[in-house]
Length: 125
Image (cartoon, rainbow, N blue to C red):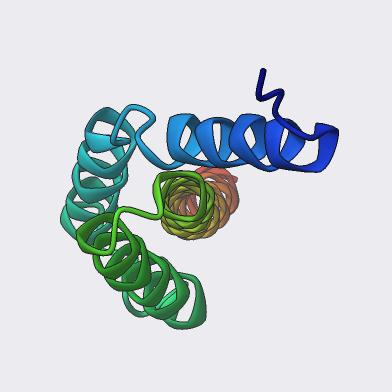
């Protein structure tokens, strides 16, 4: 009677396990979220404020798509998540810069109003 050797059984189990890992779920949702986030960052005018982050997001997304094509789903998911985070950071930097610009404009308006009030009060005297 033939019995499989433990090393053959172990090899079979390891092969099945690696195949199961390789045939996991493609991270299409994560890649889609990264694509949308990059688009939103661009629409938020992030390019002048977060050029590096947008570049990294695009690079990570391209690498994620390549990994997806090669069925390296875990790698693709990790890269897509990095792209998503970089794009979100780029959008946040753009929003922050816009807010800073608004604060500066409001301070300038306040200074102008103060000068006008001072001028008006000195002409009344």
